[in-house]
Amino acid sequence: AFSTANWRGFVSEYAIRDGQLYLVKMTVSVSDHKYRPINGVEPSEEDLALGSTYENVNLPLKFSGKFRLGRDFIEEFYVHMGFQKPSAFREVHDLQFKDGKLIKELDRSSEAAAIRGQFQKAISEMSADQVVEEAFSLDMEKLQ
Image 1 (cartoon, helix red, strand yellow):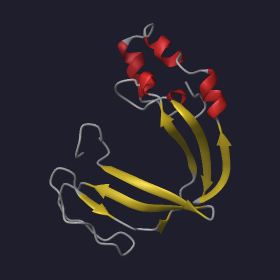
Image 2 (tube, helix red, strand yellow):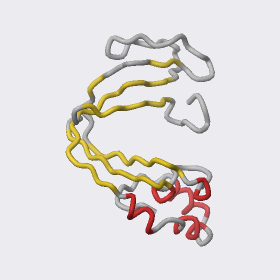
Image 3 (cartoon, rainbow, N blue to C red):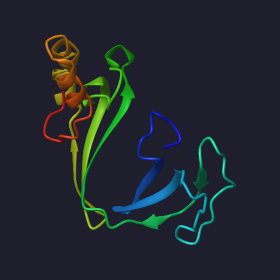
């Protein structure tokens, strides 16, 4: 990882064009410092603090699963550590893919607004272990 905020060691940017999911940019840090081309794209020169960045990769992905996207973060609902809860964003969308094709999109913004602030209240009644477990939960069924 090139940062304690990034244990996976990479940051990716994606795009959806004509219903197809693409990897468009990736910054990655590898331990052997040997960066190979991705979809024919060579990386930038390595920055020892951040790794190398691949620009304009435009690689169609075969991903099957869901993404949850949040936009317009509300600072007062920031929770230190873990993933920010969907209810801390004004706009929330769930996207479902099969073999890289967008098959379902659901606007959950009004649901998120209806429960906004509940997670922050619940934290005070949780043990430290429960807070960590909830903070890093990838459960797509609940919004909090």
